[in-house]
Length: 142
Image 1 (spheres, one colour):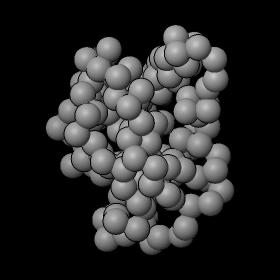
Image 2 (cartoon, rainbow, N blue to C red):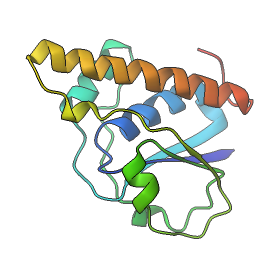
Image 3 (cartoon, rainbow, N blue to C red):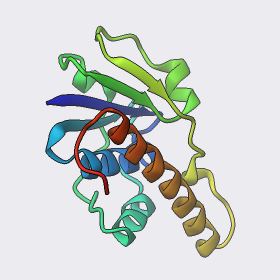
């Protein structure tokens, strides 16, 4: 079984959304974890917009990368430039991937405009996760 780590700055939005979709698309073919170089708690709007798409991340926790130092990951995906540039080194033979998704937590405007910003990022991450899993022959196509 493959092990995937999704890494972001605060492990509150983008990495949580990616973890949810990677778990969904990879099913039992991968263990998926997410972490941050800091921990900011899981963003309630991330939970809400994932629920709209039938993915429950309400039980996720915001974890620090140090919690996973003993795991030999197959893949490490950074989902923001800050995490890619500031990720502390930890020994792993993992294949590394990077995609800089916009940070929906920085969205401004009305509550509906902010929700729409989260939805746009959710859809970008969903497409990325589906492609990532498919290209590696993991799980089921959703």
